[in-house]
Amino acid sequence: MTMRYGRYTTIVVFGLIIAFPLLYLLSGSLMSFQEISQYPPKLVPSELIWQNYADAWEYLTPRTVLNTFIFVISVLVLQLAICLPAGFALAKIPIRGTGLLLAMFIIPIFLPANLTLIPTFIVTLELGLVGSFAGLILPVVGHASLGILLFRQFFATFPGGLIEAARLDGAGWFRTFFSIALPLAKPVIASYSVVTFLTAWNMYIWPLVAAPGPDTRVLTLALAPLAQGDFSNISPAVSFAAAVVAMIPVLLVFVLFQRWFTRGIVGSGLE
Image (cartoon, rainbow, N blue to C red; front, side, top):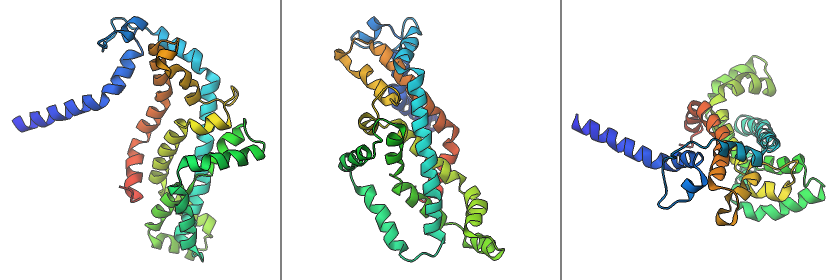
């Protein structure tokens, strides 16, 4: 009994330590300017200042939130449309030179993102897409190597008997993919969707160089002026409130797909 209480106490203590930054962010977002600026730091607000969230919403604006959802969902849908059939084809359809194709997909994963930033920007500029949603979205969609390899790994572990039975029944590769493989790939699709959603939601450098204008600005660009510390005339409590607002969609996506996310990671062999 004593060991059980000790184990529970240890879990609670470590849980509080891990959750402390998030709890302080929520607490600080409801403090007044005087409370959040005092030293030593105050952990619990004496009065809940909900006006901080109203002020933060004025900086973020509904248009910025809409732009972010357009950017993130477009990247997610287009990458799934590319990665799923490509992964299935590499895993199940006999193709000459599959090993060479896999090597070509692996190489871009090891290239630093900063190394490809300037060439990607030059190509986007030459195509006249800078400052548009197309210029913001399409270059990000092109970084699909990891997704193709992830789905290829999942479909490679697929029972071959199911595919052969569908082929013997006269199903073509497209029907086999949509009717047999795709419905059974929900866990790995969910896990990839969570990771892609989170990555696109937190992108800063590419949206900054490709589409910084007010018509295409995303949340990370709107948050940047709120995080300049002593050089900003905006209350840190308002910055905390803006960070909480920007974090809510990510938390909702992870909570909703947590079960599928775990099953997908295990099923894809990436544990």
